[in-house]
Length: 161
Ligand code: HEM
Image: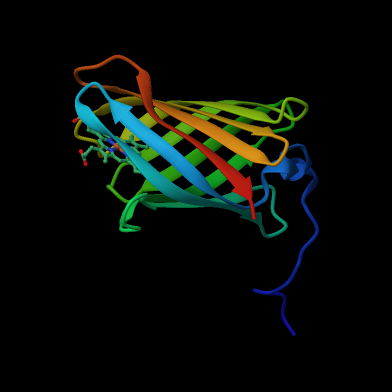
């Protein structure tokens, strides 16, 4: 039978330094910005691989109070042997982002800065920081808009399930 879905391929060596991220994470976050009312949300993040030197990423969020779906996004993370990383993300709002940055396998940290934001009416730049501490995945998203400098939009804490 041909190889396909359901197989459990070995991890590509390029992904070994980021293996701490693999899995399904679930938790809660809070968003805000000077121009909007702050809000609370639930979130699930999945990171997986198919044996290639690239990690697949999918995220969905929902209103904390009602469970109603909110923002979702998905993409691919491409770590390089020199500790740099390139990430591409498509957002449910239509925004497309390319981020570049670095990862630190010992600190379990990935730091990203947008090099391209496409099809956005307001967003000029995005910064993302992911950190794993024990069983928790914490992240922040900063953004710059036409009217505001780079500053926090989101922060969340998730646990591996
Ligand atoms: C508002 C961008 C992720 C929920 C906004 C605004 C922008 C934006 C530009 C309008 C700010 C203004 O009018 O000055 C982004 C970007 C994201 C992101 C670039 C990811 C990198 C999320 C996520 C959620 C979310 C994950 C939900 C969990 C909201 C809400 C508002 C908002 C509720 C205010 C109401 C609205 O405009 O819909 N976001 N956002 N955002 N965002 Fe995000």
